[in-house]
Structure formats: structure tokens, C-alpha cells
Amino acid sequence: MAWSLYLLIAVLILFLVRKVFGRRGHLPPGPTPLPVLGNLLHLKSRETHKPILELSKKYGPVYTLYIGPQPAVVLVGYKAVKEALVDHAEKFSGRAEVPIVDITSKGYGIFFSNGERWKELRRFSLTTLRNFGMGKRSIEERIQEEVQNLLEFFQETKGGQTAFTLGVKYSCYRQCLVDCVW
View 1 (tube, rainbow, N blue to C red):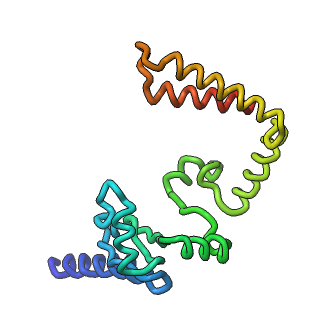
View 2 (view 1 turned 135 degrees about the vertical axis):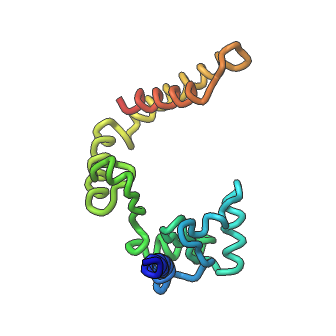
């Protein structure tokens, strides 16, 4: 009985290791990931760009990092980014699939949409914004008026007793955006 339990655990560990390391065949080289964490320990710095630049010195301008069990291709430098996003745009377009977002939004989300759904939402958004005046002189006047209102609000609170918290800032920016669009 104990041997079968050990065998089951060994097979499970082997399966997990092969699952993590087996997918690397078609991806660029990169640091070896740990089984559940991936390469998160490489990115433990508050300044994430520094370890990414250090890894690019070792692996080149295109390499693979694992964020948990999920692989991510990292592009460092203008040439690598241009080649990927301009020359091979179709291969690199799209967004990562985030299971929790799919579950909560039931496929109707805006920010994580992909493929045909994204194209449909983009077309609708652009048409709607154009109907509201986006890209025309009329909206420019509205934006300038709202910027002036925001600047006046900043002047009133500058040096005053009002606690200007992040929530108030967000509220001001949101109101300006709403006023510009509607």
C-alpha cells in the first residue's frame, strides 16, 4: 500500500515537471522555471525592469519567463519589439487568457476581450465615440473647458485645508472624462 502511494506521488511529480518543462520546445530560451512559481523569484525586485534587463544580457533580446506556470515571451529593445509587433503583428496580437476573468465576465468583458469579440467591441466603441464628437473640433472645446475646470479645482485646493487624496483625484478625472463624452 505504501509503495503504491509513493509511486503515485512520483508519477504526479514527474507529470508536473514534464508539463512545465515539456512546453519549452517552441519557446525562446530563458531561465529554468520552478514548478509552481515559475520565474517569479527572478522578478522579486521592486524595480522589475532591472532583472528583466539583466536576464536579457544572458538570454538575448527575446526570452521566455514563466509567471507561475504560464509562459511569457519577453521582448527587450526597440528592434525586438518592432519585429514582433510590426513585422509579425498577427502572431503577437491578442491577450493572455485569465481564467478568473473569463469566469466572472462570462466572455462579455471589455478589457480582456480577444479576437472577433475585441474587433466588434472596438468597432462599436469607435463609432459611438465619433457620434459623440471624438475627432472633431466640438469635443476639443469640451476637453479644454474640462481641463480648465480641473486646473481651477487644483488651484483652489493648493495649500488649502482640503485633503487631496487619491480618491478625490480619481473622482475629478472620472468626472472630466464623463463630462467630455456626454
